[in-house]
Length: 99
Image (tube, rainbow, N blue to C red):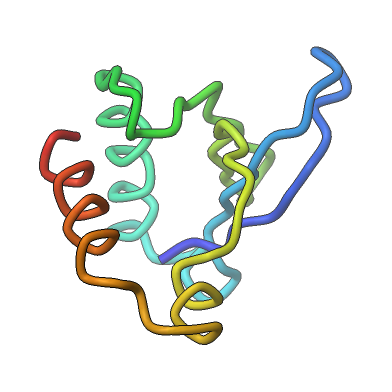
């Protein structure tokens, strides 16, 4: 539901992921409320397989989650490169379930 960008946190001098609500959803109060709930849920979690949330920012109609930047390929890029071997797929599944 959000668009994610690599960004620079100039206050803390670090790379972050910035997730913003797409323009098509900005004026939808239900989508905005879900986006804020996502931030609150992420803030309540602490697990090695879940990226940390650093903040929730809003400027007028623009809302953004400031998230830990996790380096690596997207799952789509990984699958496009080659099939994921069964053992690796099971490992990923276990990590998701633990989280």
